[in-house]
Image 1 (tube, one colour):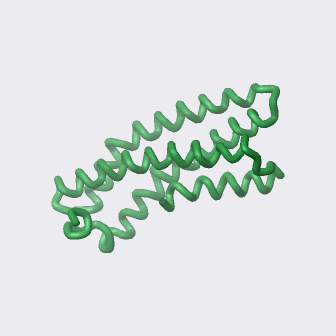
Image 2: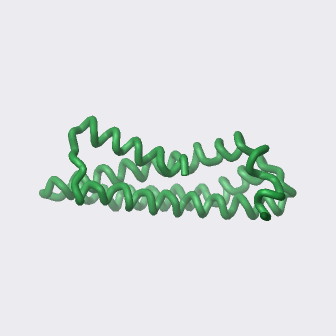
Length: 137
């Protein structure tokens, strides 16, 4: 969950710095972006687990292959959603503008978090989490 919570904390910081209050319209940001970010994380981790089994629990190889095969789709999905939510910025309503700008920013941070932080964490924690007993049990 670390790669998924980091973008939310980043957005909360931006909201606090910009003085954007927590209202029902801005609270939606967190649920929408968490759902999209978790989807990317699950996509990556599923491929990672498949590659771990295929390559006899060799973590660096599994991370590289999973990143190579899922990273492009995660990147394109996030970029399309980023620009899709950026359209909200042309609205006349302030709540919609804030929603679009903050969701777009959060999705961008979530993409980088899932493409950089998640593989780094897997490589760092490989002795603890990536063993046959843990993943098959």
